[in-house]
Length: 236
Image (cartoon, rainbow, N blue to C red; front, side):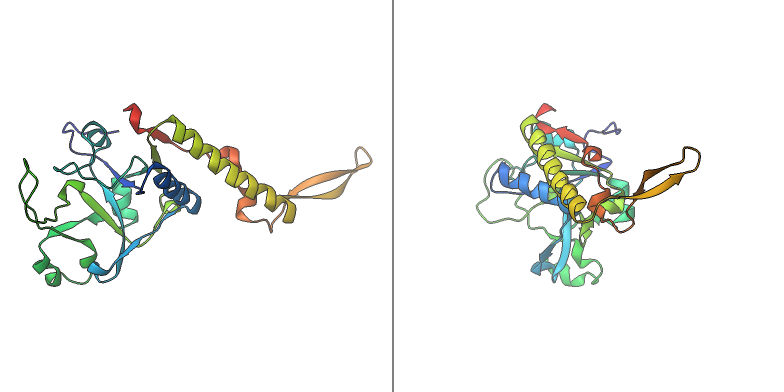
């Protein structure tokens, strides 16, 4: 996964889903996979720019030391999607966040403001700071401007869940969703149509199966082909 000798470098980027608990974070991940899109979040502090956030922190480092700051704070859970960094850079024009003081924001050109991340550190690493501070450099954040559609990278991603329970739950839930959708489509708009053709050699008529040109996307989808590449984070 990480071909670099330095353990703090990685060729991947991770988008973690948030939630008040694991079940909520799971549902957010499930929605992303069903919608095939990570919806961007609008930030008033960034003049309403909409962004998707990722981290370049290596997965192995996160699992060994945790995805937290020096006060052990984090609002992320063990659910997410991992992408190739080069694809995020080239396909989605993703770029690293710019950690800067507030006074620097208006000095940025409009086409850079979406990358701004407020940086007001405390440097009190061995004790809780007495004054409020803002320092998210520990996230090693990358950003994509606008929604991130999974189809744009040909669905080249890895799904992250904490354990086998959530892996099975996710696979079952996605299979049920597309199976039901597939069956509904077949009732209203069959995937295949049949027409009679005459076999001059045998001297009989037979039914020929043909693809329905007016079928919908879910009709073509086969639930058995929807195999996700999943990593169990608690196993690492």
